[in-house]
Length: 220
Image (cartoon, rainbow, N blue to C red; front, top):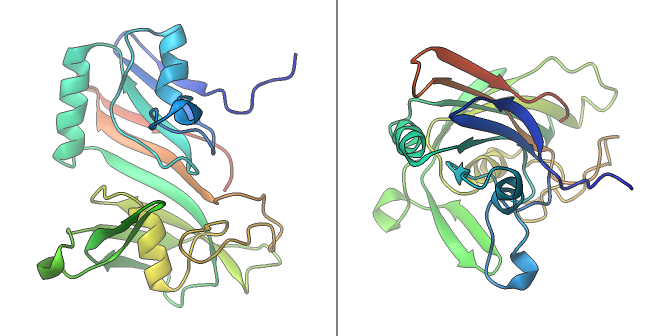
């Protein structure tokens, strides 16, 4: 039997936590309607009925996602995310090469439409909510480095579509992004699909208190 490309992969497991690799194309949680019933948490609960989703990734974003295995752990992890005590790292393949080696994007965001969900930069006084992203350009020896580059991203806030909107605002949208201006993944030799992956989480274990660094290997 062929492997299911939408099946999550276990990256870390202990009595309190699960870290899974979510494939691109899989919802984090079910949407409205039977056609949107398939999701990471639905699949996880077949194996771990007690699993609870702590945070989400966009459907087309792949990578590391954290689940709790009991309500107390869920409360502690949810509080840690809300209080920005969990560091998040993403890697993206973007159009063009930023002139600077690193920077920060401090632009408030708000929802612009619901079908499809779309967000944009909106001033704070007009409904926008604070959103801050730090980024760093990686050395890229690829032949397409003149028209595409790889960035490490650290979202300080956690707004919906934050990284995708911020990078589009910067003038370097994520490759393969049909909503924010770079729906051409593959033109630089990369794989098709949104070239954005959650690759790391840094936190203190909610029960032992020890530093925990979780990693998700692979492209982009």
